[in-house]
Image 1 (cartoon, rainbow, N blue to C red):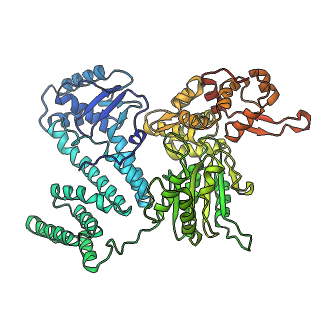
Image 2 (cartoon, helix red, strand yellow; image 1 turned 180 degrees about the vertical axis):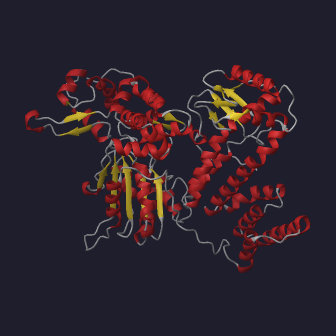
Image 3 (cartoon, rainbow, N blue to C red; image 1 turned 135 degrees about the vertical axis):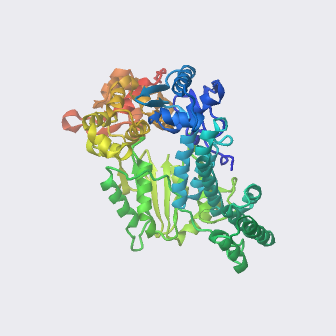
Length: 610
């Protein structure tokens, strides 16, 4: 059951590999490409061996398993030597950095950071399931549509019948479930009319799939096509009786009963405010105090005639976990806001600030307001938004605000609604007393965060190496998560192996990249918001070192008479920290985060403005 990826999906959502060279495909004909060019694989047997090794996900594949996939129950006398030949050919064709190692009675395939479409599909499907369960329908539809876009045909289309019979049903079942979940998300978003053609085609192809037929009945009913919906139910009842001798199940029966009772049609369907929040990636480690402070700010009911909007701001350097903390706090506070929790990203996929009119229209749409297409007047949208929020008990979460000018039109009205904002800079719109700044994690908290991703037993077994690893990450949660994700994807790697890669400052930033997580990209997005003059100063400033240093010292090192404006802009962007110099020094002191310093030192140097 194929489906095109949701419109507007960024290429990064497909979960592309980081090495930019090798891509393995299992969800369609088994194939390999290098830098977009197909790698020739001769014969069905070679495709089968590659598929079995990939499906093992870096674990040992015994010779007997390969033999069963190649020849079933009747292997030839020379099966072991033939398997050896196939593996040797694969090694030669795939080359570096792929490794196929002989271990005991079998083989292990290590594809390093290459893309495997099945793994990308499973990751996106898992994230989409979670979003759907938490009623984040827009995000669920986007993720599940992208997961389905990983497919390019029927799974394992060019392997032996033995492997096909054992593996394809499972993979096609996962595909069908992902498609059904994506349809559920679209129905929850009110996209019933656009779903009807797709569902008609799917029901025609899979006439005994009751859930798909129930979704079609629902979509037709909501589109005021009740007669057709009744007909679809009647056809399904007849087919089930004739082909299987059974009556319709609960989901199909409920969809039919809703028609008879007049429930859920276009005139009666009520759209709930969406609980739209970023993906919840486990517990937020090391932020207990900050989370408690944010909950206190959001749940404290204002009183008196001077009562103001409840607002809280989370600031911190790129990768400090602002979005994750805000999402965790929003989930924990959701029950206190019976009219819902709505969320909007204030930056586009390229890191540019989104126009406030687009964001307000998105929020109104999430709250059930119709007719909020692009091109609407901002003043009119703001009036409708504040009217809608004035008497509501909502939590509005705005992620990655770039300025007060962007944030001001997005402020909700009323004291029963609360606002939670994340930003890389302090904003005067939110009082300083309501601002929570995220500092780097302590080493023990960083180790605990690593253990959440990698597994506590694995970390305990190599605790000294784990401590070295998190020190190289300098307490930055994004860096720790990337390192943990790399280790989780390579269960046979010792922790010390990755720690050794991070130990070298020259390769540290490159090693802090996996899948769609990349520290350098996060830092570059922050740099893109700097003024051109300050952006030009940053690479030169790396020569000052980590600090602490004064503005006077910075000016002497980089040859700039008045560097204060650039330094303060970098502080505002959370790319530098500042602290009072004390009476003896008489000047503020500045300090680089170690990973920001490495990134700045790697940037090209342009001529400084004088």
